[in-house]
Length: 259
Ligand code: SF4
Ligand code: SF4
Ligand code: SF4
View 1 (cartoon, protein in one colour):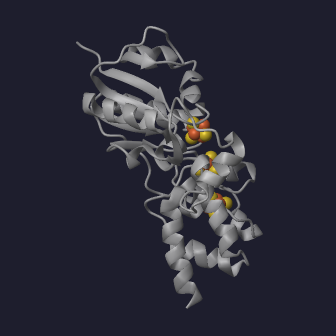
View 2 (view 1 turned 45 degrees about the horizontal axis):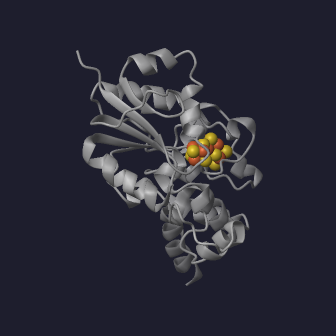
View 3 (view 1 turned 90 degrees about the vertical axis):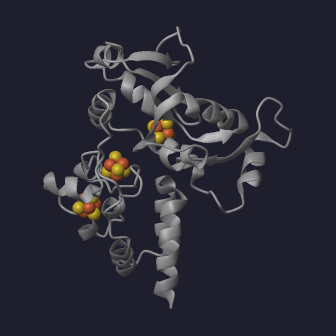
């Protein structure tokens, strides 16, 4: 039987999501034996570019070269899966997006000389350029969530990621809620899947899994406001990983709250 052909690619990010896969030492042989891995630059040298069943993409899109690559990749790939918050939401490098300050910040770091090889632009998620089938968020991704979904995808099943927020997993761990200690925890609005790693170590969730489908933003906003947090404080926390999707929702709530 022909094995599914898969490729692993990284764009702009720290590559920590692909490293998370390579760190699955006990399962790594299964990862490579279960599929025909045709491209994985960080793991092998005999890479080829051809028709794929699944492309896993880590990192955000920050240059015209990466954008062109995505347009070349999509027509020859049956399923595209975003790995990690950079790929799903633009990542930490997108936290100041849509403020109109990108060029100023870019010039501060890289100077004003024109780039000759690639044309850089503000960091964007993969779905700003091509249709994406599934999202496995996190900074980095959760290894168990990846392995579970990798097995499903290789069998032709859809990805299965929680719609519920981190709070649910936090309750399963019987943690004392950090909001009760007046800490700004984003668990109620952040997608589950990490097994509530941070609150289980007495640290507030900073939202690295991005927005949860089934969350109550209005309630979280009112709660944080009641506890004395200002909109800029809440916005900065949400921007870190949640991308502009989060911010747009919160801005409309903020406007309502000010009326
Ligand atoms: S999501 Fe986080 S771990 Fe993954 S590539 Fe981006 S910065 Fe690195
Ligand atoms: S500590 Fe955070 S994640 Fe846990 S229940 Fe409270 S708000 Fe939710
Ligand atoms: S608790 Fe929040 S910040 Fe921590 S790993 Fe989970 S989603 Fe990320």
